[in-house]
Image 1 (spheres, one colour):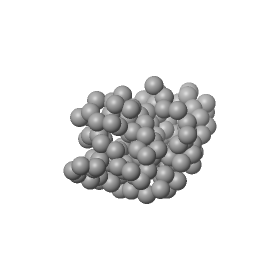
Image 2: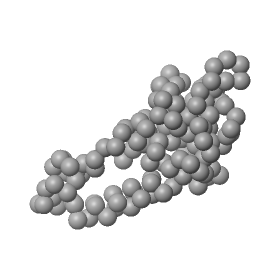
Image 3: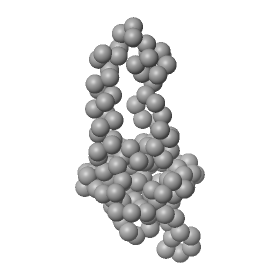
Length: 134
């Protein structure tokens, strides 16, 4: 359900959170989360532009969280990359809930709402000591 970009961003941001407040070089982050370095550098730059991360150049530079890990819900990271997108219908009927004859809506909406709640209430701090998925 998450794009590859968002998956890399979540894994990378969690890795950076583990080192907070020490900055980490892009190469170290890319190796740890098994992401292509150039692609991840763009993702991390986008997160920095959106206030999730801070970046610094030079020796000892890299990316670090802009604030404490408890300040960021997973939804903040997703929104920083994808904006505030409306939920789409699973069966391709436009915006979720617009088509009253959608056969999936009654079953899907509660699950989608639970997912939204999970991403909105779960912070980086909540996940700090969980192993990274591979």
